[in-house]
Image (spheres, rainbow, N blue to C red):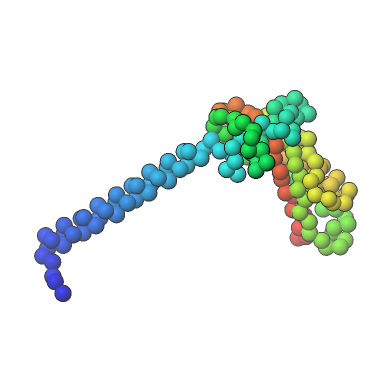
Length: 168
């Protein structure tokens, strides 16, 4: 086994340290670049388009959504998109029929987060009992969001929310 002199060992470790440092700097810049290039995409990594199924909401605001597989021919809206964030999520009342039978349920609701952050035009997507649907719609009427923005201006976005009914 060869023994390195003190000066040779120092040079050997300095070269290794520089190599590791260069590797981490490259990794840092690659990660930073990928984060900035993704900033213009909606949260689900789909380009933003004007909604074909909900072109406007009940308040007359233009509605946007993430481009789906069947919407590849729709023009993408340019700009920097910031997704909405939740402010207030009141819990739905647990329906007596579920409580009595000790049943858990997940209910999907589609609606629009308006420019003011209200959850409007909500519809239950799943086939559920009427009392479950009523409980869900009553709860989502009280949802409040910080609205999505496109280039810093609030916009209305079509979204889906899953309500979980769990026995505690």
